[in-house]
Structures are given as C-alpha cells and as structure tokens.
Image (cartoon, rainbow, N blue to C red; front, side, top):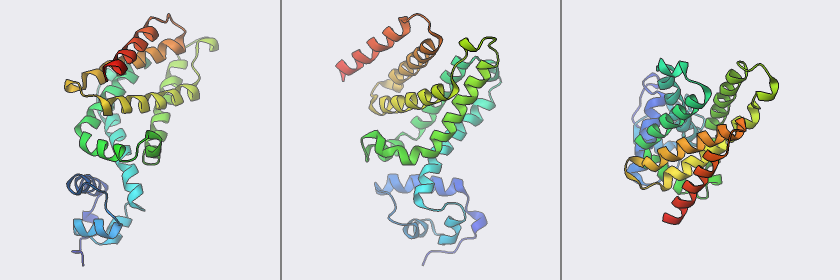
Length: 220
C-alpha cells in the first residue's frame, strides 16, 4: 500500500517534478497512475484531484514550460516596450533556455516517438497557448497600423509561429554546438525571415536563412 498523504500537500508542481525525475531515473514512463502514486507515497485520489490521467500530466509539463516563459516575460519591464518582432524573438530565446534546463527529459520524451508528429498529443495544450500568444502579438501590431493592407492575418501568423516552434524544436534536439549557439542563430534568422515574409520586405534574410539551413544539413 502507498503511504497516505493529504491531498493538500500534493500540488501540480510536486507531481510534475516527481514525474520528470521518475522518467529520467527509470528511463521509462510510469506504467499506471497507481505505480506512479506508489513511487511518490500518495494515494490515487490525491493525483486525480489534480490530473485526470498521466497523459494529462505530460501535457501539463509543456504548458508549465510555456507559463514559466510568460511569467519571465511579464516580469521584464524592457519587454513591454518591444515591437512584435523583438517580442517573438525574446519569447523563443526564453522558451529554449527553459527547455535546455530540462533537456534530458524533453529529449527522452520526444525521441522515443519519432517522427515529431507522433509527439503532438502531449504538445496539444501548449499549442493552444502559443497560438493565443501569437494572435495577441499580431492583433497588438495591427492596432497600430492605419491601413488594412499593411496588417497581418492573425490566424495565418499564429499557425506559422507554431510551425516555426516545431522546426526550432527539431533543430534544437539535433544541435550539438556549444551552448546551443546554432539554435540561437536559427531562432534569430527564422523569426526575422518570418517577419520579412509577412512584411514583404527584401529577401536578403530569406536567402541568408536558406544558406544557413543548407550548411547545417551538409555538416550533419
């Protein structure tokens, strides 16, 4: 029998931390909620009061990564004065810093089910948050533009931002450079390219980004 623990002593944060540690220590996911609770020394009702399933907990890990990014951004006074391009750059830089702090867990979870599309269920809730963030970002920029012809399409941009995240996530997973400096370059070039496409500006950055990706492909 698992050791009894009051539900109030069990928080989403403690369950998430223990789940990640469990995966890394055992090199596999818990087989059941019962097994997971037994390893933590709590009863199953304490778990179900916070999560409906282990899959729900796995999704919450990704939304926690996202929420931590937003907390850091909102606490940054300089960020509030940034333009849309700079805000998206800062978002991705911060997100991948947090993913790097949890790299062992992230790599284990994503590499066990390649290709990437098989991992989308655990990213589903994070996707909703990221789409909302990108939509708000574009709405904020559009509000400052006088002519509709110069405005960006929020849904199109938000979907592009999600695909951009998936690309960067795959790039980061394969990045073996010191300090993941190549991922930083990919973030900067991809965000600048995305805004250049939407703004119909000269294609210098697009060509530059294409050269970067080609070189990385040849070197891998």
